[in-house]
Image 1 (tube, rainbow, N blue to C red):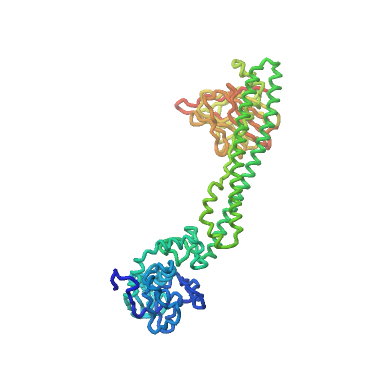
Image 2 (tube, rainbow, N blue to C red):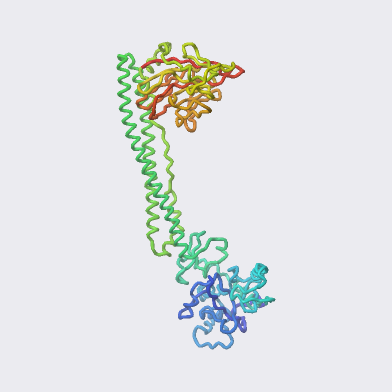
Length: 581
């Protein structure tokens, strides 16, 4: 082992170990320097690291430029018998002899390539040689042979020569070279090389680190820096990133289409809202005119409320239009950036810009999660005259009910009043009623006797002091047998009270209703021709929920008082009051 205090200029290695020729058919890296046929042959990319290896006889041939660089690094002693017939074999001037700084890192980079173990692709650690004069880290070749124990033969990873009883010979000279090389401060040189893309010193770079999104020069970059990274050839990287950018472009184009559709929907809603507002102004005006101007103050109040709702809705829509327009511009900018990048045909230029591409695309991708609330037209439709009338005369009761219940549809547990306007759950044994296809056999429900196929209808149901009920409409042909899902797809349009004080619309899934006070009366308004079913708090005519459907056939009113409990809860009946409009 050479002393640590001696430099390159004071060390003569004597006969140098023969340099290797890159093995064929393997993807090892081999440095290329200079020109001529030898340089071109050595300049191709072979395995991930050739290492400093020797081969017997004619096999001990290496690229001449790499050989010269190694000789210069090793005190400029050529191999024994080598004739210094060129200036390349001459020692450097005395002022610069013994230093690597005279070669601007190029010689160090080439020497480094000769010091890489072809198994781990790192600088040799405890280098040993085989009988074939190839060099490896002791640990690497040992682990390689351990994996081959099951096969019964051990071979050289370079030349595939097999050994019955292989012996590992320590290479002290190679260890000295590795020690001297490792002690030399090359970080500044390597960092400077690493900054240039593509590598100015080694012409075209043939690797790309997908993890760092950066071109990789194996001569200049430390392999350890990319040891756990995904590294591939530039052709594969080009295809992979082309595919990735095309997917991003497709996502941006999809987002652009969704934003465009959302904007069209918002603009259509904007026009419909304005049109509905105009129609509602007329409807409200006519309703108040029929009351002979006695209700001017109420009319003014409702118009102001309408204008406030309109202003709030239009403001919300316009803000969303502005926001989605801004997002659309950003999405289009992102798509333009990707299209420009994809239009770049030069692979190195294309890959060189990948590091900054993600930063440029920040803020360009937006999801389209358009949500909006319907304009509250239901507040201004329905039985307007009756609504206004009741708001001024709370003590006026409805006219006698014309809507009645159909006993032939009632569950056997239900008890109906003589006039069929009241229904309650009975805790007694089931009544001995004859079953029929019309009767509910599982759900404690009953239908109204009148079927609606056109026109405008309104009725009220008293639900005071109850903790459970279901009220609404059902298709005349809806199933009445077995357990029934109360939802529009099954032919039921209802609201429900559940859990004692919760109210929901029976949609899919249920929609929780915003009810401040417990309901005592529920108003049900049906405009069959317009496809509207609206529920109100009948005490103050505040809106609860609206179903908008194209009704396929006749509809019947639907009632379920829910089951009564032994503790006295939910024993009150449902009672119907009907008002014709």
